[in-house]
Image (tube, rainbow, N blue to C red; front, side, top):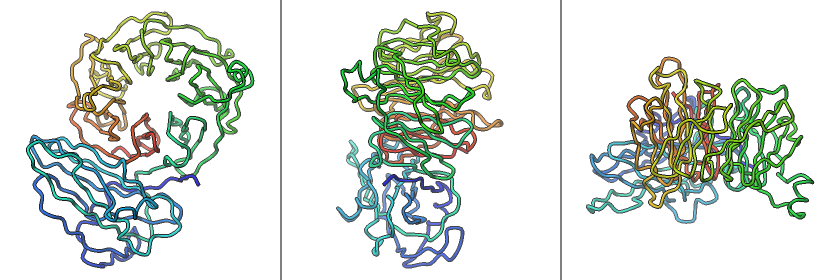
Length: 484
């Protein structure tokens, strides 16, 4: 059974669950009557603070229900690693998976962790089976260790409209490979190795899905084998028809109708996997990047003719992104350790930013930000040998110099810049292999908030403009978080 969306407010639960006594009843507020609640006692600790001390699930039958709690590192100079485990070993796998819920907190920081209950018809008779314990993940070098903290589970009978949701989980379709958000419709396109799914995040329902298989000609070229995996997807919304494109690991591009998911075209585009698409804001152009080190520009109004091939990278191209300040230029991030900028009318790049390691992601600062920041770009490094040395870098494109580094990210770094409010600075997003998504002030680069959904490594992030939310694609699921 597929897991439908579930919602939870990351702010309102804290004020409701700070102080409860044994078997206290809340009454019939916005969350309805709360029942089966017990006191949670926390041992004294000088390293961390966990709040609230209850997991309040707004239960609905056969829906995934999420509940946040916050962990604060009170130290001035020490990173603290935490993980979540069931209080009663073996009792909770039926209700939620805590294996990936945890992370490392820098000094004087607060992280939000989201526990998500799987779809069940009814709650257990004994709510104690849902209790969660926050424990040390690693021992600090100086020997200081915080005590375990137990979070007691409780349930409410009704649920108000909230601001964050988990859409689906690993046991639905397998590991997520790619994701895109429709700019005008409430649709999220998710792609797995061999399946495509479109979700409506407003109605919290799955619109449609189909198995991904190569076409007849493609299969003939593979000597009859039908084993082809998806590598990248993207909506095309500027055309007269609602379409989306799929890139596979053989270098083919597949064009599908959104409403029927029927494939209308398939063609060989690259010599290896298609890693990324970028859609031109005004022209019928699509960029495709590939492991074959090439970038190509396609015109879908003219039968998907290739207008230009861009050469210059010496390793796979991981991502391409159009410049919002000049639609005829774009950037590419590559495993060769460079981020290059290009014009669509020339096959060669005009600038190259040299980084210390391979680059996984790139984004421009948006038009709504500070005028000076319109000349800035952010890049994120890819997989490194050490688990904590992925880096996000801020670049001044006028001088082609790095003006700031955000270090200590885990494994690799997805980056993005979101212009979510006309009267506020843009939000810088970093997401790393350690499952955490961090929101930074785009002026000071200070981390303002980090959220862990326990859904595994982050594959991609996308802004949901109409809802001012961030869609976060993890290997084991998709979450949506409102940005305020």
